[in-house]
Image (cartoon, rainbow, N blue to C red; front, side, top):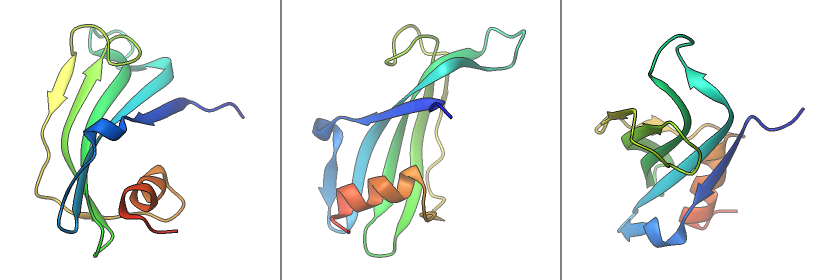
Length: 105
């Protein structure tokens, strides 16, 4: 089955403060997402995530939808959702990112 999206993280966006690591994730989708007959449709998103390397937790600090791939075009919607820590799920993209930025293998 072909991948439905690709994920990139620019190393320049990774910052560390103690056991917390923050990064910007870019996700490009193969197909347009959003409500079918709406102007709120998108082909890419950027998500600012923060990982707690010690507790293996994750929170989203911000989320933006874009009408074109590679975060191009006028942002369709922006969300802020900080202060809600979630466990990093096994066998997920977030698990892979946690291992990458927290140095766990």
